[in-house]
Image (tube, rainbow, N blue to C red; front, side, top):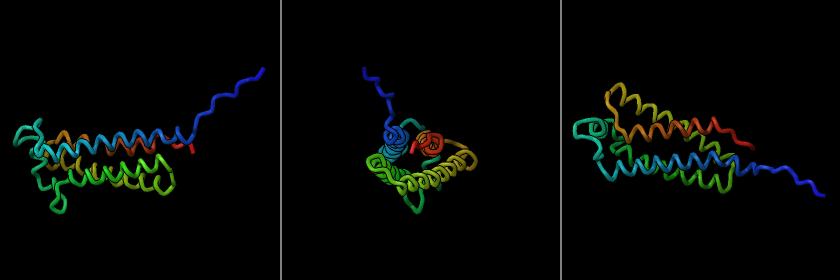
Length: 147
């Protein structure tokens, strides 16, 4: 009688699970950034209040370009990077993902600070994107690679 071997987890597949989760987060951030561009001032926000104040403030643009456009480009690039890392992981891609997430989180913290202490109002869409970016950094460090 043959004794079955214990089930072994596919370490590569398991260690990639966090990157699948982070890709999902960045897809959400991409969708929200697209909504901000498509809708202009979101219909959920009343003119002259919250989102409208944030999106018409001097902090809504960087170098004259609406920040949501940067978000779309950055989240497209990050999703492409994450997808290629999932398909063929490398140390360089992993490092680039970590560095990008740290920089993105610092920028997100700046935007949260501006909304909380300078503008004293919040854009729901902006906060969603900022929280997603910070959450991805936390996921990167909280969920360890098994390699």
